[in-house]
Length: 341
Ligand code: KG4
Ligand code: ZN
Image 1 (cartoon, rainbow, N blue to C red):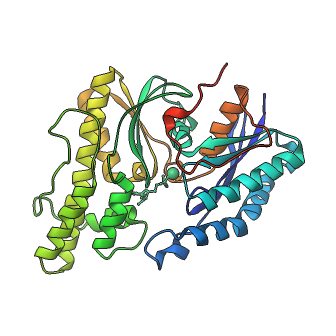
Image 2: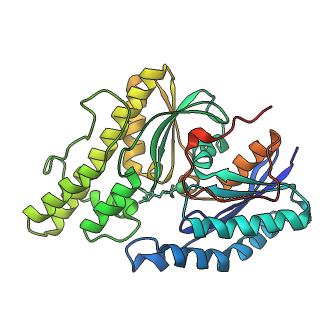
Image 3: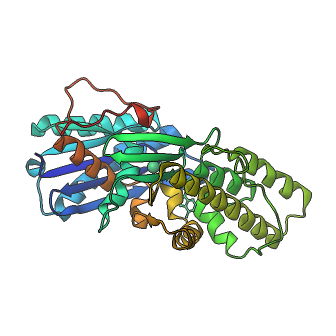
């Protein structure tokens, strides 16, 4: 059983390292965000992302080891993000983690990034008991997943087009806001007035647990074209957009709880950092009698703590890999093996 697992995350535009210790939890984590580097391009440039991971990852690993008062030889396993993500960016983490593990003579394990997000709320205390329904809302994914146990995942519904985070990012661009769009829209929405603009709650009137957010972005485009580009109007649009996303996520999450008979909802992924979503979900949970759990804000967006922890759980269950490895830029959650315990 591993005692100390080092995790590295390089799937997109955040370079991160963390150490998970059995019985103690996350003992150190560090992150470098590339947001400023990509901001001028209005989105992530894959080649720049890979190059920056190469520059930053060794320093971040040294930093977490030193903060935890450990050396490389203390580590019992190395977890790295295998996918989904940008192929070149994933390869940087893969090569680095595998080399480190090989040199130290310890096992390495490629972790599913969304499983990391999904298990991140378990790092809080008390952790949510399983089974639960997870609402995974990130830049690349929007899914409702029934979680019976580690590795026992059933996707109940997902976005048929844009993910919620992607919708935030694309809509922010329409409103002339910087990347990443989620936090930018959230702060502009704080100046918006309720009731000025109405936007649809896509796919909520028909049964089912799938989402569609691309129409919302088009509805915003029509609003922008129809009105004068006045600052207050943009704030009203940001407000209406955020409400539409939040309402839609809440309606479907509630439906998923009813459908599965679960009493617990776990929210994870970057959009899970949205204050308005948390506020409204807390109200809904209190009114409807279910529990809702979130990771702390720094474990909502991309981080390596969730990768170290997921790697620890899977290595403890006998996972690990031989020297033959590959990244999985596209990797359905349902293809993950159930760990044998
Ligand atoms: O989980 P994450 O860090 O990376 C992926 O795995 O995709 O999620 C990033 C997404 C971006 O689309 C970003 O705009 C969104 O999360 N996001 C937010 C907030 N913070 C980040 N969306 C809404 N409100 C926020 N406060
Ligand atoms: Zn993520």
